[in-house]
Image: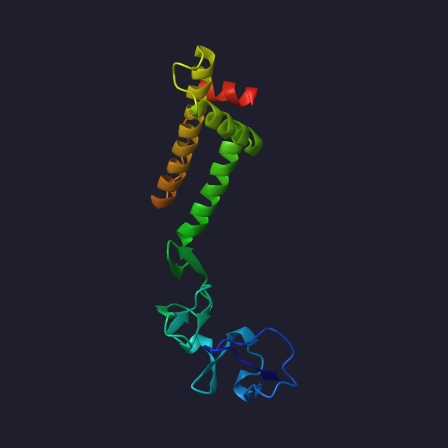
Length: 188
């Protein structure tokens, strides 16, 4: 069996290697080792389980060797899953699944009250009403604007609760839906 490697020492999984001049024979000790667990460091094929420090490329892939100076070092197991956290990569932890579940629940909670189409209609109506002064609006238009603003505030509060619950590793306590939001949602 032959393998080729990307810059940085990860196995190149892009295609056939048997006719590639850069292909390297897999050493006897590595027979039966999953190919994704093999790496190349200083011209030698290694078992990535032996590596204690990897380098992260811009898309979050781990490499056993630094091929580009901008790649960031990280200490982690060879099979660690990296997640984007703001402007940096980090190893996924148990809290990430909790946060992901909360995000899905938050989205379902919001969409159960305000569908995407309803939200688009509300924000469009708010844009129209936003061009009017309070003197130009009828009482009904002012109530409608207030209800749409309440809908936006409820969505923001729901998202804020989602983030807080995720950061504090607790279950979310969703804010109650104001009556005016339920009523305006029915109209739009």
